[in-house]
Length: 430
Image 1: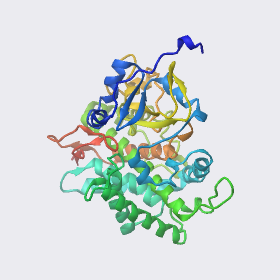
Image 2: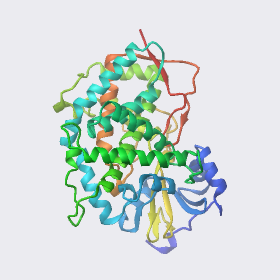
Image 3: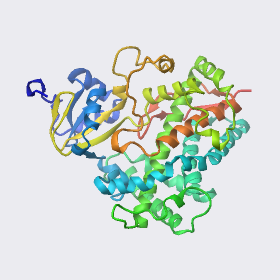
Image 4: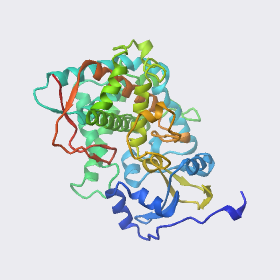
C-alpha cells in the first residue's frame, strides 16, 4: 500500500482514561459516539491503558488477517479470575495445544452424545413453567439451563454438586469485568474466594473415576505440543473457562431472543407458523441438522438477528505485537484493540437499529457477523451454543405458550453479557 494513502490514528485525547473508563461502563453508546466523530478506528485510554476501538468489516478483516502480528488479551480482572493456565490467557504453542484438547468436547460426535441430556433439560423446564403457581424469571431460568448443559451433559454433574458449583460460579461471573482490587466485601474479593472454591470442586471432579456421563473422558490423556500431559491445575482452569464460555454467552443469547419474541407477539406468531411444522423431540441422529436453515429458515433468521442486534459478547480483544494497518490507519505495537461488535453490527445502510429477522431471509444483511469472536481464537463452544439455542426455542414453544408480565424493566443490563434487568418475568398462557 502506498504510504500516502495511510492516515494517522485518530484519538480522543484522553490521557489517564479515568473518565473514559467510567463512560465505557455506563454508556451503551460509548463506542458509537466516538466512531461517529472519529471514524472506524480510533484510540483512547482506559485507566492508563492505550486502547484502539475498531468497527466495520474492513478494519476487522485487516486485524484478523495478521495473526502473526497480534495476540489474545483480556483486562486484568478477567486474567486474574481465569488464571494464568487458562486457554484465554495463553498465546502461541501453549494456546494451540490446550485449544486442541478442549476442542474435543465440541466435536460432532461429542454433540451427539450431549443431545439427549439437553432435550431432558428443556422438557424439565417446560414442566416447571407449566406447573408454576407464580410468575418465573425466564432469563434466570435460561442461565440455569445453559449452566446445566455444561455441568450436567459435559461434566457429568448432578444434584448438589451442580447446585454448589452454580452458586459460586454466579459470584465469580459477576466480577469478571470489574475493577481488579480485592477490597474486603467487594465483588472482586468475593469472586477471588469463589474462584478458589470452584477450582477445588473441579479438582475433585478430575480426581474421581470418569463416569459414563458427560464428556470428560475426551480430555483424558490430553498432551501439550511436546507430548507432556496437562497437570490437573491446568485442566481445572480450562474447565473454568469452559463453564464461562459455554454458559454466559448461551444464556445471554437465549434471554435476548425470548425477550424479543415475548415483547413482539406478531413476531412470535410468525415464528410459530414454522415451529409447528417441526418435529419434537428430534432423535440424536437428527438433532444437529433438523433445525438448520434449509429446514427452519425463520428460526435461523431469528437467531442471526439476535446475534446481530444483541451479540452475547459486545466485543473481543487483541494486542498488537508490531504495528498493523487497519482500514488504512497505522496502529502502533503494544496497543490493545477492541473489536466493537455491537457498533459494527449496526453500522451501515438501512434500518440496522431495528430488530427485524426477515432481513436475513431476503439476504438484505451483508454484515460479517461474529457473535463468537473471530480468527484463530473463535469460541470453541460455538457449535454447542447454536445447537442449544435452536433446541430450546423449538422445544419450549412446541410445548407451551408464554405470556410476559407487564410493569417490569425490560431494558438490558450489559455486564457481563446482555440480559433483561428484571429477569423477564413470565407465566404460561392458559
